[in-house]
Length: 138
Image 1: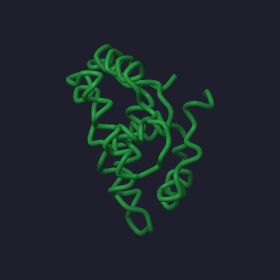
Image 2 (image 1 turned 90 degrees about the horizontal axis):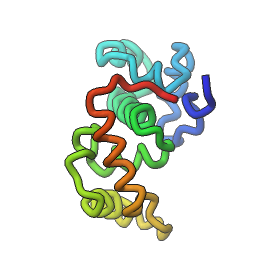
Image 3 (image 1 turned 120 degrees about the horizontal axis):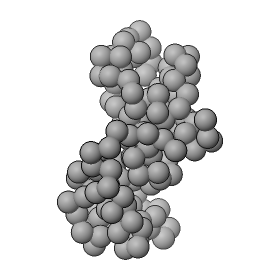
Image 4 (image 1 turned 45 degrees about the horizontal axis):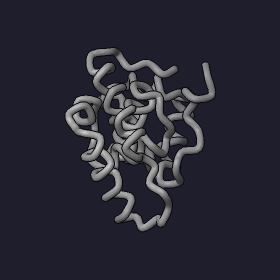
């Protein structure tokens, strides 16, 4: 199990969900990706976590496992409205930069955007290659 596949350094907004996952021995992005919606509902039942946040984490896990990217990049894609490799593969690099840049500007971070044209091209190509592959973390 590589460090990249371990669930760690999650944002504080996922604190309750992280506790739920760890207590249920879900410690890798792969294992999070493999749980069903029914299992998510069962995990949340009687806890302080939310189904919405666990589904967000599952989407982030999908991008981490299929595109082999960092947590911050995966979260940016998800929060920019992209939920699958199919959605990413249909974009041009410029469109991907615009979508992610728009979200980053609303956050007013003032930092250099995480996804530039070169990175966008790389992500789109990788998304196209992984359209029909079963996600697996490296």
